[in-house]
Length: 222
Image 1 (spheres, rainbow, N blue to C red):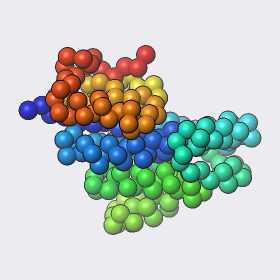
Image 2: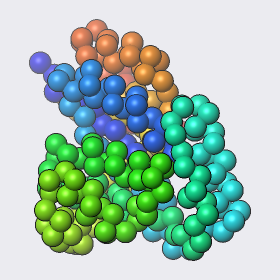
Image 3: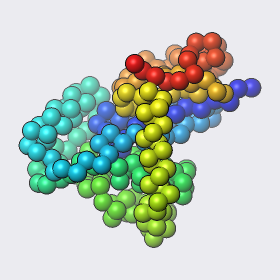
Image 4: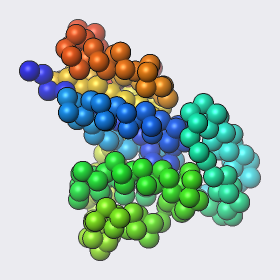
C-alpha cells in the first residue's frame, strides 16, 4: 500500500489562501483519513520592512476585491485605514510553524484564526500578542508558545519551509501537492473550486490514478 500525503502550501496572510479556505476544509474533511494533510508556509511577503504606501494599499485592496468576487469569502476593508502598517508575513508563518510543532492537531484552526484575524476582524496579525491569544484559544500555554516562537529553531524551520517552496518550484499560493511515496505532483497552483479538484482526488485516493505514472518527481509549475 502506498504512502500518501496531501501538502498544502500557503501563507496565512495571502488573500487567495483565505479565499481557498473553504475548499481546503472540504479536502481535509473528505480525504484526511486516506492522505493526511500537512501545511508548508510560503512567506508571501516575508521580511517586508517598509510601511505600506497608499499605492501599495490600493494594489492589495484590488486583490482582496478580486478574491471576494471570485470566492465569496468576506473581507473587512477597514484594514486600509491603518497608518504605518508593515506587511511582513514572516511572523504569521513562524507562528503557524510553532503550533505545528507544539500541537500539530491545532495547526489548521490556528491558521484559520490568523486568516480571520487579518481579513475579517481587522486584527494585527504581525505581533506576538495576537498569536499568543490564538494559541491560548487552542489550549496552548502562552508562555510556552512565546518561548518557542522566539527561538532560533522556529526561525530556522520557517526558513526551511520557504526554501522548500523555492526548491520545489512553487510559483503561487495556494498550491496543493499530492505525494505518493517518493513521487509528487501538483493538484492545483492557485485557487480552484472543490468540484474541479474532486475527480482527481477521488481517482488518486482510490488508486485509479498513480503519481508514479503521471507526475514528475517535483512540483515545478514553470
